[in-house]
Amino acid sequence: MADFKGVSKSYGSKYVFGNVNFVIERGDRIALVGVNGAGKSTLIKLLAGLEPLSSGEYTLGHNVELDYFAQDQYKELDTDARVYDDLREASPRSTETELRNLLGCFLFSEDDVFKRIGVLSGGERNRYALARMLLTPSNFLLLDEPTNHLDMRAKDVLLEALQEFTGTVVFVSHDRYFLEKVANRVFEIGEGEVRVYPGNYADYLWRKEGGHERTPTLDDVLIGVPPAEPIAMPAAAQSAAKRMNPMKLKQLQDQAQALEQRIASLEAEIQASEMALSDFVSAQEAMRLSNLLEANRSELEKAMAEWEGVTEQIEATA
Ligand SMILES: Nc1ncnc2c1ncn2[C@@H]1O[C@H](COP(=O)(O)OP(=O)(O)OP(=O)(O)O)[C@@H](O)[C@H]1O
Ligand SMILES: [Mg+2]
Image (cartoon, helix red, strand yellow):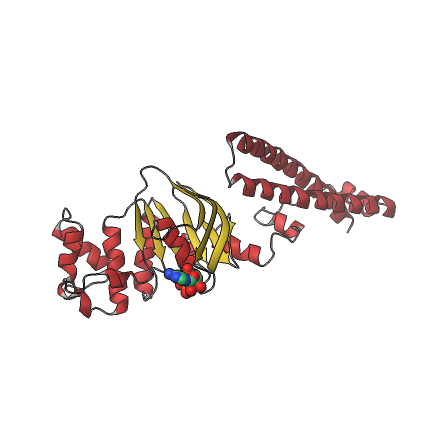
């Protein structure tokens, strides 16, 4: 629904980032992360159409309507208006009960709703600005640090509202809990680049720590696989196994080791295909990848079964 091709952005001689390419899909919840001054707000503004691109192309899908929540959105509010009146004006068709419920959800008391916006604290104003936006949300929300000045309770309210929201969200946040609960993909901005990470925030952190460069070990492979039921061996077979000659044992151990390597590489290939599948290129490519994925998964199953068989034989000699 939103597509950047070779986008770059500078403010005069100040270069922010270049050669930015990504596709945002309907329903995406994308977190923008990066240090102060990296260009997160800039990217949000480009998406909102509030800043011109310096070069490249930005295509926005049909029927996409966006809401932009600025880093200092509360400054946009009419300070003379009373909270309740301002909200009613924003959504004339809502009933009084609906408006009061929403304000209640965003922790505004009966008294608060008749206050002038100008007397609210920064945090309260920010909270009100969010409530106002969520009253009639568009299908594409661009939120620049919406959790700023929010206390835990208000954050939870926003979190829940976003989790129920079925549209697309691009947001900037430094709040780890929020990032973990909301994002399905992460865009990291820094050093003049926007790097697209395909997974959620936990996956992003894992990759940053070099997790994907580490060859998976058998322990990684076996996580989540229930331990095999020990197979009771007849006494005769047990004593036979105990007498297994060392050559045969060595053979089994080599076999187990080879299988472990095979399992690890199949796991890595499966992971790579899964990752590639999350970046849609074409129907043909997606088909090829899912066939490969299927084949590798059944290979993996076979290899695991074989490995179990071999290790059982080894264990029986112990
Ligand atoms: N209108 C502007 N004119 C000139 N430079 C600008 C303008 N807006 C932003 N910049 C510069 O562009 C860079 C990126 O700014 P941006 O506000 O996008 O960063 P950010 O990642 O949102 O930072 P923060 O985490 O502090 O909000 C900064 O160096 C900033 O000084
Ligand atoms: Mg910013």
